[in-house]
Length: 324
Image (cartoon, rainbow, N blue to C red; front, side):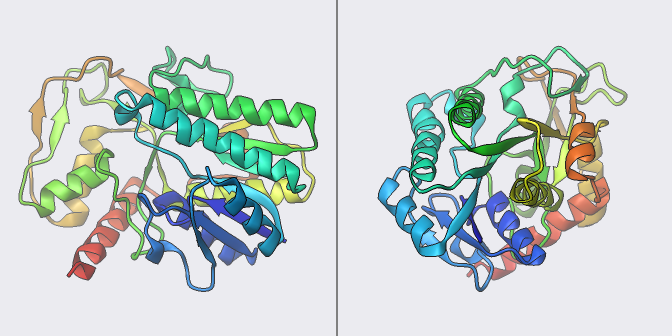
């Protein structure tokens, strides 16, 4: 009764693995380590090194580990870079998902929790994004996530596949000091790297229609995100009916200036961010409602912004200390 976590050596995937371990559910990781790190995989959890484009490897993993369901977190996750690398993005996120679903279907694995993205909405014309908000992805990355959701839906109609997708905006923090966000594009690691490099973090735009003039976005702790994936997997395993997709969001959001202030407090580094011109296309506010996930999955946000940033700082400092 083992679950396979694709991308299981990544920042999010490894948190999902550890959440499975905590729940007493056997799990195995599949990761090509292109961005993941083998030491993120918890002790006692098998790591199968390889790509989800390798159907034979997926088939062997399913058979050898008696896989009953898949949490699919693998993919090319850089929305901005995807604009310059659309074919690579489509190959990894669409073709990779198609091959994974094909192997699952051939081997009788009928449950999937898909790690989707709020990028499927693009720049929504709504202060509060719900699952019914129009989908208008603004990048190949967002498009690939939406197409992957369509693949799940189509196979679900044609077979016994039971599935759900989790959509979220900005994932931050760490539930374990030895796992950190290494993305070169996400706000929090960019700020932390600037501070440890002796540079000044930057804010793009201070004239937005928000309380403090900086963009408001939704941030959730990676530990809460991992818990949602496991709750969805357990619900599917128990035969409960789930919606095709759930937003994971705070319903309120935080401004970039608030994030900076929190990092200043938890890090003890006194800095004043440089303010630059706003970037084209950045909306004032994008926040998601997590009400449906709360209703069906029992999902809640358990971390304050201060706790999110403190956990990110601890993991970042631990990673620096472990670097030769």
